[in-house]
Length: 425
Image (cartoon, rainbow, N blue to C red):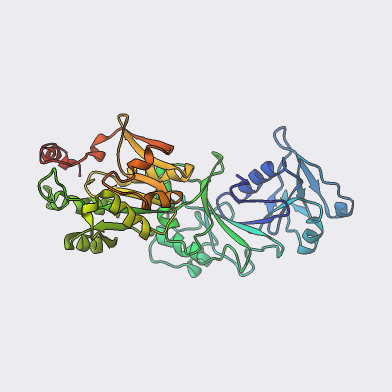
């Protein structure tokens, strides 16, 4: 986990935000104490932890600074003053002296009264000037909860700073809150977002949709301190392949209308668009593809040589994609749900390897390739697409039970099966 945040000896880390600041601070401290001396401090107030069989703390008081001899495998906690079992704020002068004694310093730099959102005072967060990294902790589990004092610290101040008319906490509230950049308060060092409590596919969807709207998106992490899961967020580009000839179908299958009077391609794009992707591409060959691209917000890439096979579509899409992974989705997957797409994306976050759906032991699409395969993808030729890469590279199997979602429409005979499945759309 400390490797994930790229924490090195000499780092001073300030932690801001809400929803796990103190937990993250002690979690990091317990990991870092194995590699050197560790100090915890605060520039706000934190509860003084109790010494138990499961933890080892050394409390440091101002009069002891000049005679310090830090010990490995212990967490040192600076207590300039303790009031009502709370450790009071350390001043910057003491922290400047203490940093000479410790390999790592972790500082809780603002308070939130254990609530996921807060109104910010002008002096918050109080970031120590010699901080090298600031980690902003974000808790999005308040989505859809009522906007009130129970869920928002300094509610009236929050309303003045981030007022929206909605009575519940919505996605746009979080996006505005995060993009205000108040977590870092003019701090110019390395800025990191950590989204905590991402413990289900449903919450991952909320996180994914918010993360795609963050302006400062270079260092985003997510996971669960409770479950000891930490991942670096990697954004992906869905690339819809829609320039085939449908030879076995005897007509353009993507323009075939189902009982709901929508075409196969239209439904496929509609389902993909239920997720807020940062960018999404469609590789097509005619005006029908172009108009649907515009309708659903896809960037249209014209395939002027569709006779070169599926690989040419893969190459064209890869060349235009700008993010960390490429999710290749055939245009004839009208039953593919957003939940299955998100499951594939989540697996990619965990491993940064090729992710391949498997249904009843058989490979299927869509397939997600990390950006490290860029050169391999643009070198493809013929009608095999990315399957050639799978023959020689390791990949992660993502297992699914519902074969209906991955139904492959190739022939007119498939329409008979399709008609029995349409009611599920």
